[in-house]
Length: 73
Image 1 (cartoon, rainbow, N blue to C red):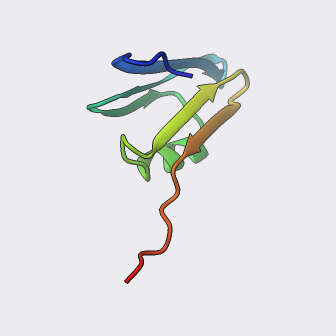
Image 2: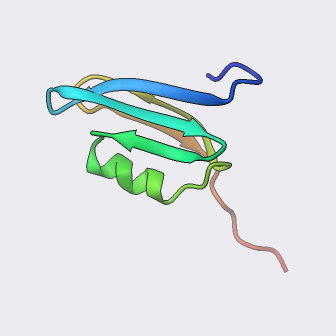
């Protein structure tokens, strides 16, 4: 979990035998060498929707985000 007041969060991992990372800041979400399914998830999220994330070995990953509900009239 992020430290309150921190300006960015970083997760390090491994995918396809090489290092991978995800950085989350107020300016956006950046990544390198992560599985395609994770790229798809991250591309669909805004900076404010991403709650928590982590990377592991062998392309494993975890993402927690706010899900938009149906709009009320």
